[in-house]
Length: 114
Image (cartoon, rainbow, N blue to C red; front, side, top):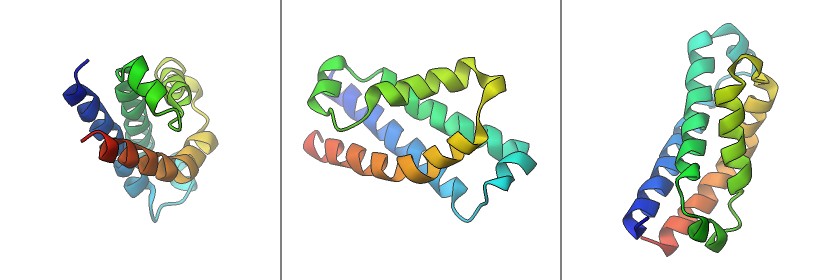
């Protein structure tokens, strides 16, 4: 994969992670239960973050070990394949607790590899 491709994947990860966090801002956990469209949108955005991460080369992943690649990709796989068993409490915590620091790490990686 070329450097440009790595940058593109990182930008996808960053954009979709930010969009998920922005979408959940000023919402409540109960909104996931009450609003099917919101639940599907948030789930899909997190899936895309994982899909983009899965296409980042192992070499780049090793060079940026502060990003939890395996966890991000594993979450994507659980959301895709376990779509009927998505734990909305876990999804909510990921969006609120894990995505903000992840976006910071991705941005740092992008700054190192413009």
